[in-house]
Image (cartoon, rainbow over all chains, first blue to last red; front, side, top):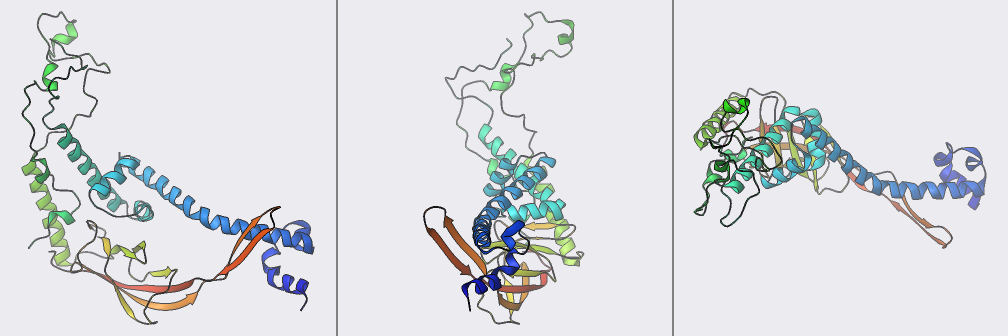
Length: 136
Length: 206
């Protein structure tokens, strides 16, 4: 078996759709196939990143429909120890809107609870001169 | 035993609000926004004497929270729990979906679903598997959210191993131009195909 024959036998299914002489001439084809492999390897890593970005965008959009922001939703779900990841939250927001609404309601309730706990009775600490306008 | 409130949609807020606040000798901030009769206001202000003109400092920067009644919240939570209990006892649900943690990934799964898992599982083809880490179960009328997992007695998700194959040969290539650096490796991942048979919720919630 010649090296040339081996090359064409193995790669003809990959480079048939390439443009120009890259699909016919050996030297150009070798370089094109190498670049294709390298691009595919890099893209497999980048795909994971872009998928996560997409999920985050979708969850943010869905939570804004429910009058809630994405960071608040994620942080409060974490505080409620609900361990759903972004991919599943994205799927729920698309296919199970009621469940997603209930999750946003849960996060919202936890958030108000946290705010209420932080405010206490609404008094300011002693010795603080407040800048809030007062009518006397 | 009825279902503890942790596994229901809205969180029971009553227990957390019994905080120990220190005694403060200062008048609460909201009380300072009271008007006095010595200041002359335009006619529109006379109808509501506690009016403060809106500026960036006229109210505190945190939002005004609605009034909170612990008993009412408790009553609402109990009503929701009762309703969901009733639906589950009657079996008044159709197709259930579940979010299952399996093979370090989370899958949103229903009956008759096929799942492709990119690794090897220690089970022969045709074996019945029970997935125990269930994070969420829902139907058309209710959802049960686990914190973080639902109990084993509550939900049962059964699956069968259908196929154990390998993936197509993926080429992992690294190349730096003008450095005579080139590496090529062929990766073949083992794969398993599972079919989800049933998702069951037990008739009495604990």
